Amino acid sequence: MDGVIANLLNMSLREGNVQKGKPDLVAEDQPSGATWKPLVFRVDETTPDVVQSVLLERGWDKFDNREQDVEDWNLYWRTSSFRRAEHVNMKPWQRLNHHPGTSKLTRKDCLGKLLKHMKRTHGSPLYEFIPSTFVMPNDYCKFVAEYFKEKQALGAKPGFWICKPAELSRGRGIVIFSDIKDLTFDDTYIVQKYICNPLLVGRYKCDLRIYVCVTSFKPLTIYIYQEGLVRFATEKFDLSNLRNSYAHLINSSINKSGASYRKIKEVVGCGCKWTLRRLFFYLRSQDMDDLCLWQQIQHMVILTVLAIAPSVPFATNCFELFGFDILIDDNLKPWLLEVNYSPALSLDCSTDVSVKRKLIHDTIELIYLRGLRNERKEHGDHAHGNPSVPLADSDKGLGDTCSRLPCGSLLQFTSGTLNKDKPAIKKAVKIHAENKPAAQPREMMNRKDVLLSTREPPKTKPQFKGRPTAPTTFTPCVSLLQSPAHKTSASLRDTSDSSQVPHPQAGNFVLIFPFNEATFGASRNGLNVKRIIQVLQKRMNKQHSQVAEKKTQR
Ligand code: ADP
Image (cartoon, rainbow, N blue to C red; front, side, top):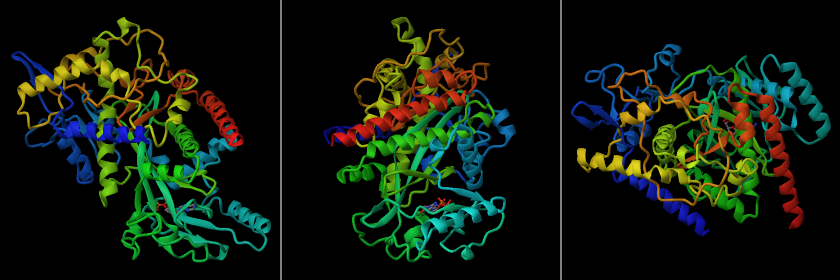
């Protein structure tokens, strides 16, 4: 418990730093000396308010096309995808919050097809995390066959199915049925096995919103967020009434208008959301293996992203923040319901505020870590025989990470390498303080560091060794985006620099792929999905036997 409290403290210290005006800094060289310039974000009418407020709080400026040059921005964050031309015309100093070609993961019918394909290609057990899915109308005959097969097997007991529009969200158009005569659909629906034994908390059904950031598809680099949301139904789970949306659908857009939303509900309390951390504490208090659950979730995320990674076109300087919706059954097995593109960032309750604000802060930290790596080159890490960011041991990589998850580990992995950047950060903060009114936090850019990023990457072999050191108080990063004022050929090479080991952590984001040398190798210079799946399978087997051993020891 002490560790948890220390971590919570660390987290608030870290957030406090930004709020107290210790910004990420960027400078640009002028003939008269270094001047400091805020980074600029661009929005449209779909950009979530929380993104704007976090960026403003971090000292960014909002892009204004009347005052600024059309290319004079650093981050464009919006809900909808970007056009191909927008990706092609990206400048080296710019970032987009969407990657081309990822939306197929987020349509329910495409996800069903993709995972079915992976199941066929790589073997069933691995991809058994999505409920049986039938895409209508193509799979209608297969569904009917499955329906009657199950009916026969169950005898007098009813089976349950759910029919969902492929493209809608927020629970719209969903029907749960037991009798095939209640099934109506058109060609944009999927029919899925209804998980009728969900994990209940105080007799309420719940699901998880897990945030995942893919910072690059080539080479594949996946981070999972060690905090998230648990959404609850607001009426007690009851299979005898399939029409009660407040009991079966967990969408907060539905439940927040329910009569029981504000009531104090058994165990759950008021409202319909918990933090992920709170759920894991609860599971642990009920003697449930939250660690094993978290490991399974990580595997599910990797396996799902692998389903699209080979087909995603190469694009630099963009990232994708996904929202994975995961239902847990009463055996603590996670089931993937869907993957959301632009997960909702509205702040409907205090839980939303605490999770989503920090999520955006940490996303910004994460996308600027590349800068830190470049800066490390200047500060001589290689000369000291530490050519890459140390990750967990190749055999322990994910296992090690998992072993401290989910309850006690948030922020325990703040790498020692961050400490090594401290002098530069301090320098940057100092310069910032001298050049800017202290009260106004600024996230700025250092041109010298950007130019360093054009240097050849080290020829040394990446190392996956050693545990990250103990947590330290968070120190803000120095951002190394290239200033629009410097339209040189310098680019953020690290996006395509496949020799660099990704940073293990940014705030609550932890690297889950690549997780050891084998997966690092298999994801660089082309993605060897078969090899990656073999390695993952081996790891999963090892973890299963560890869990089984633990159980027999009890
Ligand atoms: P939407 O995009 O409309 O939110 P989801 O697939 O996320 O659609 O489903 C909405 C809700 O329906 C989920 O929060 C969950 O409560 C319930 N649900 C969806 N699929 C299943 C399933 N296969 N088994 C049990 N519950 C499900």
